[in-house]
Image (cartoon, rainbow, N blue to C red; front, side, top):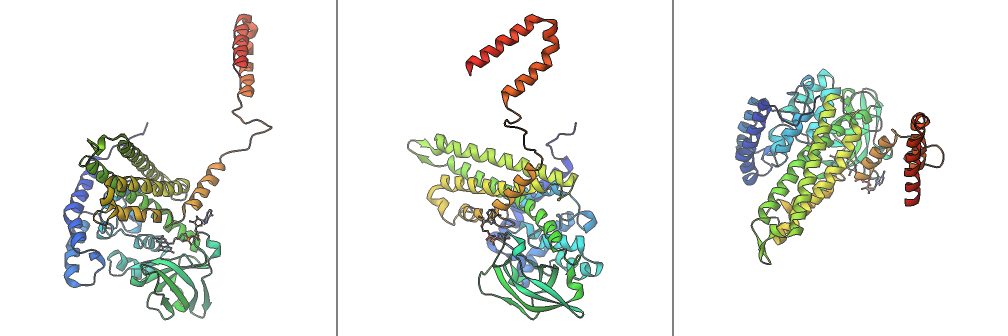
Length: 426
Ligand SMILES: Cc1cc2nc3c(=O)[nH]c(=O)nc-3n(C[C@H](O)[C@H](O)[C@H](O)COP(=O)(O)OP(=O)(O)OC[C@H]3O[C@@H](n4cnc5c(N)ncnc54)[C@H](O)[C@@H]3O)c2cc1C
């Protein structure tokens, strides 16, 4: 009977180390030198590198990658427990070599790249010598990949890519762009002639690919394989977001509880008001449910595959968005006016919460997937009545007792009495 919610003591030691390292090293760096990891200033780089070296010495670098793909191979459950800590600290995923969008792109390269492609792109990405972005969404369609138009045409010993992408996160700061075309996934250097980055949006870039020429070996995986590669990338990415969201929710709970115990209103500490208690109690339960669901889904991936776990990954994706919206709202509300300012993390968390229901697939699409997959395990009932129609079930149940009634007419009378009582009661 394998049913256990405890963490191995050895791994707990690692988690404790990570917690302490994030609190004492990463948080101060984030507060004084925000976005330090991507800085090209040698003085700031000199602050980041020793931290990353410590992470490597602990065997915690690129922890999202399986062993056979070049990472420590923790698996998704352990990664979930680690991400529960990292998600609280802005640059922690980057200090641990495990930040989106690079993680998903590295996963695609590790799984589908040739040795030459891995040497050219994966190794420098793992070392954070180069950065990447993922160009899938298009201005005319995001949720439905059938609307994508960006296409590559083979001309001699080159591919020529034409199309337009939108919301490529950190595209303008990337060295390479993973471009999903209708006929394959391509790696495009950001400075290739024809790559045109539009001025808006500033962080999630609108990029025109105007007949961009790339060599044949810039096709990643098989021709026409883009959707398979994208699923691989997005499946992992979605659960990693969920793992980090748990820590954001916990941060919101910590903040609301501390504040509720610290303020007074109408003759009471505000934590003594029942409507405040309800928010705290609902938030706590929602986080616990989300956490168990995320960890169970991670465990299922470890014991099967991303593909076989896709219903739960999709359900976790919209559930975490909902819990984050509710819990961050509760925290902001309990914080009162202070909650509406940018003097604590809560305002940004609440403002960013709806994003979680859009990025990596909108809630509606994931819900449709879940409903479709759940329904595929059911059949319509025959005739007018559902399987749980009680009179029909009772009639069938009575037939089970018929042999006993034959032997014991009194028992039949008692059963008839019950039947009359039930009929009278309506
Ligand atoms: C912060 C952030 C970062 C992102 N980063 C990247 C990135 O790096 N690379 C990249 O390629 N993309 C990125 N995206 C884009 C993201 O993948 C898309 O936003 C997402 O797929 C939805 O596409 P859309 O925005 O075009 O919305 P649309 O497809 O236009 O959908 C808009 C709304 O229509 C409704 N809707 C759509 N389809 C259905 C349906 N089937 N059933 C019911 N209702 C539906 C929903 O209400 C939905 O919210 C990012 C998005 C965000 C917010």
